[in-house]
Length: 83
Image 1: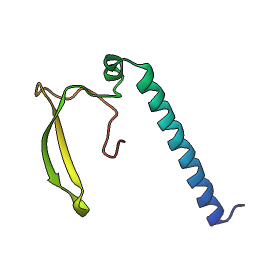
Image 2: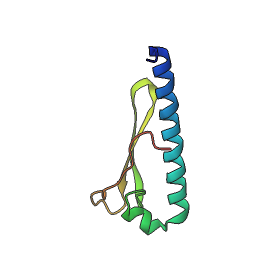
Image 3: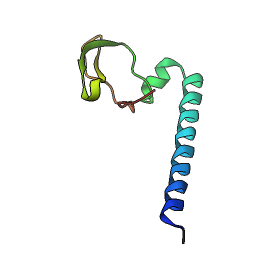
């Protein structure tokens, strides 16, 4: 049975591997899909404009975007912290 330190190190390795795979998959999709296809799959949102900015916790900038048409955002997989 692994020690706690071994378990934690292994989980960190697996999480890093998963992150690399997700980045690779997203990069592949970004280069192979047209902008319209990426929007339909929820990988991008087109026509955004900056609506407001605020200072959040620890001095981080919080930006709020809206569609230029002011309609509701379509379904997407984007979240805070996306790079």
